Amino acid sequence: MTRRDIYRCCVLFGLTVGVPCGSQVATSQHDLIRQLQSPSWVERSRAFADLQRQPRGLAAPEVRSVLLAVFELENRVVITTLRDSKGAAGVSEKYGEEFGEYYAQLFDACLQYCDKGSLLAVMLRNSQSGSPIQQHAVELLGIVRSRGFSIEQRGQIDSALLASATDTVSFLVRESALVALQNVIHADHGLAAAMRTRIHDAAVKSAADRYPNVRVAAVRTLGDIGNPADIVFLRSVAAHDTARGRSHGRSTYPVQDEARRAIAKIIAK
Image (tube, rainbow, N blue to C red; front, side):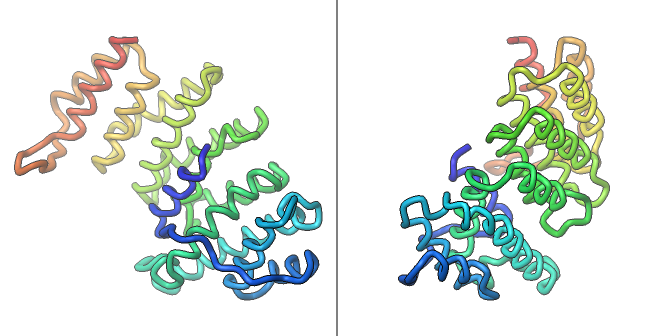
């Protein structure tokens, strides 16, 4: 996983990335750790930037022990911003590009230095239905699954993604979960047969979703994980799905087109 992947998720969630955070000279590591726990995200970001420039600054045990708490503080900033605006504006509108850059770098540092179990617990909690940052958390889970997590932890991630693929509240969450499951299929060539079956079944079910974007993601997933027995079903989708779009002034049928691509992928396997 690259930092660019994290940036992409931040952009999709409204955390526009840009220039690195500014910094102030701190006199000691103790001062920087204290600033990391400041009520102000600006002070926290400056302390984080200063620690990045120090040899073993973020890797120091004293710093590693507070990184996860700082990550949770920034998640609260995002949640509070969304709630205050009733979802109309993200933190980029309120705080500017610097927050997105800082947030992405902080998350990357947590992946490197924080306890994986504790970090995963935070991400799984954020990915639960009803969380204001559920979609963002689901996307990140799909990206970071192969980033040092144990087999058991990857199983927890897979189960959370499958649950989100059938979320009843948000079609955006369902779509993001299916895209994340595609990442799982591509990245884990040793994925257990039972999990492959669960992903396959979720994709088949989602191919009947009321929202076209979800159906497109589901059919694309079937192209990745399906077998010749799915071709009859996909041919039906390619013949009958009614979702229409416009491209270059012409009518398109995105779900039908994706079904045809899925059939071609299965045949080529």
